[in-house]
Image (tube, rainbow, N blue to C red; front, top):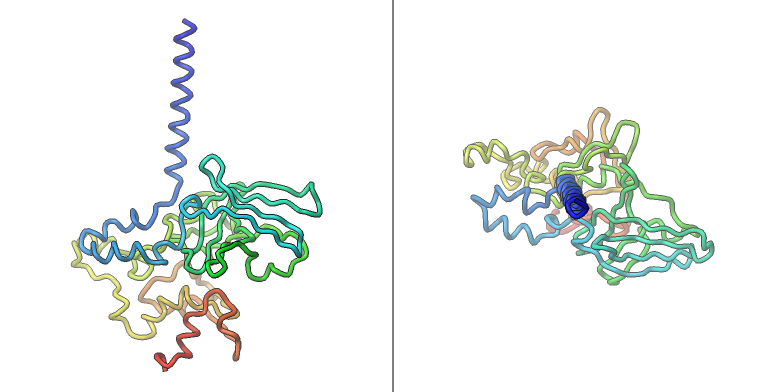
Length: 288
């Protein structure tokens, strides 16, 4: 009888672990290769090529692009480490001046294709935050995020807002009312940038085997065509959502000016910000 009870207990434990694993998988966003697989039925060559681009690889699960390393920010006296533990990415920190200040944070997602850099996101409860350090391709090393380099103390937690997620992930969700970074469910449904980010919703196009039209940026007028790129590749010195509109509701084929207003200081250094491709293009010989 005792042997039977032990077998039953082991089976119950295995079932619990299996259910937990299935639940965790169900709560993970799907990658572009799965979200856009339906497009490959008719556009396989384009689909395979797109999967290799920075846009398709703009985000994902942290372990998919974990870069173990250590960085010491001498000005604040803080040591950061990105490591792997039990097949889970982890960010640890400790103050070199105050030994009691120490902690570990499990990493959930990576953000950034790695062409320029990569950072990581973590959750505390339902709240989503961004790591204060990032891995930079030019130096092949970690450093503080822009704006944090001169701090003489450990920076506070950095809330990850949907306005930033929307240009690295797909089907980004609105944060809970009254918060800027609380998401009771998944903060986004797909990692990477899906085809619909530039071609709009594709359901009708798919069910009619391509008979229903879909947005083709190449066939749009200049304003609507450029709006698709501007929606993510123009940061400006200040960007403001227009009253009654959310950038999350922008759809390809619409003017981005309906949703956002961008302001750029005259004479600003266009290489100082993380996203300035649109400004650089506007000053180029090609655009003029």
